[in-house]
Length: 285
Ligand SMILES: Nc1ncnc2c1ncn2[C@@H]1O[C@H](COP(=O)(O)OP(=O)(O)O)[C@@H](O)[C@H]1O
Ligand SMILES: [Mg+2]
Ligand SMILES: [Zn+2]
Image (cartoon, rainbow, N blue to C red; front, side, top):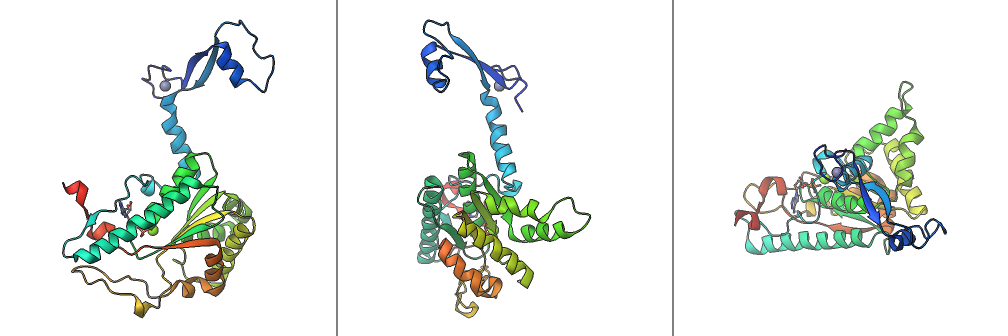
């Protein structure tokens, strides 16, 4: 919606701009004769700048970016975090891991769709910013005009399952088609629901179709490739060990895991849980 007190459009959402004939000719180059030399200035109605915030909001809503993550972008992804009681070297390694992940995801978003035959698989424990980075990329790409979609893994499976229900307003294809067709899909928290045969077949179908049609997918997961016993427990007071006790392969099956190797670049993030542990150095200053 337009701002009701906007001086440029008086709340109508449209503002009038004048262009001289040269400018108008450039704009209507595909319609020869639309304007001829010597014509007076032409008057155009264009969407007022005060509506652009709404347009962005609408684009993000259409892409199903949850309110909780709307604020996530690259600028506010911090890589100079500090944790009480964490050793210097440990902290430096975590911050390096964060900057590296940010760099890769940011470059991916900036270059999309060029040079992005591969998507990204963001792997790491809970709270390290995987969803934040995936949303930052999705937002940037969607706001450039590409079609994109965010889905939480469990929510997607639930919506597909609900669509089988006779009373349901949605159809399976109604849910699936946008997921299969979006230029970019962010699938959040892969493996977070119980790996039933049906769920794995459904997700396998989605990933295979997107892969075969050369559509790019960003996934996040809390499940790692390492055997659970090999995950180092962070030796920081109050730090939790990753709560996952399965590997990603156990959660999604061998077939999907190896398909992901082909269709995504894996980005592992090793850092502390941002919500629980982190104070930001620059914010403290
Ligand atoms: N490095 C960071 N800089 C700023 N905010 C962060 C960072 N890492 C995580 N957050 C914030 O912490 C919360 C949890 O991050 P999230 O991306 O959901 O973690 P994950 O998906 O890895 O579990 C989110 O609100 C996110 O915006
Ligand atoms: Mg997440
Ligand atoms: Zn206005």
